[in-house]
Image 1: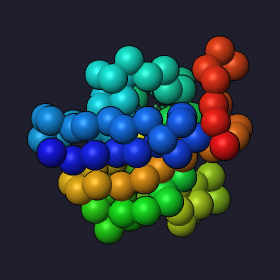
Image 2 (image 1 turned 180 degrees about the vertical axis):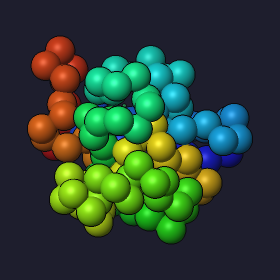
Image 3 (image 1 turned 135 degrees about the horizontal axis):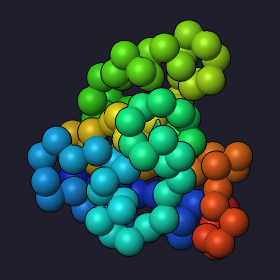
Length: 107
Ligand code: FES
């Protein structure tokens, strides 16, 4: 089973049991609030996360992610949670600019 660790949510561990499940769906299944302004359609960047470990364990970037990367709205160490599938264990972080006001984040 794949494990996604979210560093600044107190090292919360999310286990992905469904193949082809996006990171966004996986965190939502664990009742974690995650910003996703376009509803997970790859049309914004509010669901982005920073990859700390395991970048090679993530599905290849989608066209949407490549387009945002070209526009400079997605850095090399960032992925869109709605577009990315974790194929192996990874460690990620919620960027400061997309933290939700009602969620308590750790360092
Ligand atoms: S929710 Fe908009 S790009 Fe992921």
